[in-house]
Amino acid sequence: MAHASQRSLSVESFKVMDVLRKANQLQAEGKHVLHCEVGQPETGAPKTVAQAAVAALTEPQVMGYTDAFGLLPLREKIRNHYSKKYNLQTEIPTSRIVVTTGSSGAFLLAFTSCFDTGDIVAIASSGYPCYRNILSALGCHQANIPINQEFKLTAKELHNEIVRRKAANLKPINGLILSSPSNPTGAMLSPDELKDLCALCDEQGIQFLSDEIYHGISYGQTEATALQYSQNALIINSFSKYYSMSGWRLGWMVIPEELVEPINSLQQNMFINAPTISQTAALKCWDGDTIEELEKHVTKYRTSRQLILDQLASIAEIDDTNIAPADGGFYIYVDLGKENVAPGLGSVKMCDLLLQEKYVAMTPGTDFEDPDSSLGDRRFRISYAGGIETVRQAMQRFHEFFPTWVERVKKAKGEKKTKE
Ligand SMILES: Cc1ncc(COP(=O)(O)O)c(C=O)c1O
Image (cartoon, helix red, strand yellow):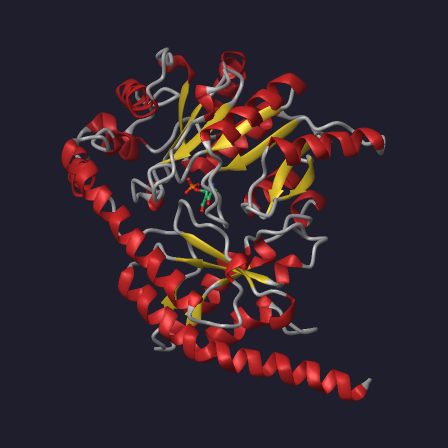
């Protein structure tokens, strides 16, 4: 009989995928489901990229392996992207650029190369759930650091956690992984905040992994890369979001010099290389036509974002201080607040009813919060990656649904009071 390892059994599911499965089931039954759960652009790959893939299909070398770190011309384009976009003073050597199987593949390489079993890695709560789940699978422990009132984890919060652990005689933190713009909150660190965080990590010998997957999708704030402030930071990025190529399974890392050899061995053994066809097509990602097309997507995200914020603002029961800033990415994260939840009636139940009754899929906060905190069942995430019309209809249905939710909560609280 097959036997699953304890390690694999202890890994939580990625709950947004569970919501997606239920939503797809309803869709298969013929229901008009509106997907606001997954963070997946509805737009396909840029035209130039798709055309390049088709053209490359008959070239024999495209069917073969590449170097473990990826095609050199692609790594050169990534290097140029950093010089141009972030105005880096020194060019990054291509030997420090690794093309990966999405940023998810990068996490495995990065975590395995940076951390040993039992190491402590700090993550933000709220934060991207797969950090916690992959780290657990690798036998690393997490230090969950609550985000501040601005929905951010800054040097101050990290410093407080370092001090707290010291005072409590707990093992010190070995690493930190953080995404800015954040999934789920959309909050972005300012360049100064990022600089301070890099400085603190360097001073304390904490390996900083900066997940910059939502760069390119922001609404006015300056995007800074950790590379501007530290040579030790490890940068993770992807073609899944801004470049609208989620299924192509392509990402990249910029890694510190010391990790080049270990990551080379790991990539060779674990993945050999990222998909060759995707690498070949991605060479078109920085062409003028491509960027023009991608910038149009960002304009649409901006419209969808405003649409959701306006609809939420018109709901009296939702306090606007409970809505995360949505500076970047394509998510809006909402805290229902104590008033809009009751025992058994939290955001998990709300998202479930919203899907069952209105066929609108949204993700409860349990995916993004420290499992020991009750906040997960109070918060939920709306993804607006799915296009303006989807968002418009979804928010209309949400608007119809929400008063019925408030009634349910009031009733539950009223009934509880009578029982007392
Ligand atoms: C913050 C963050 N990092 C990484 C990923 C994984 O992306 P991929 O593996 O497609 O590059 C996601 C996906 O939603 C994400 O939100």
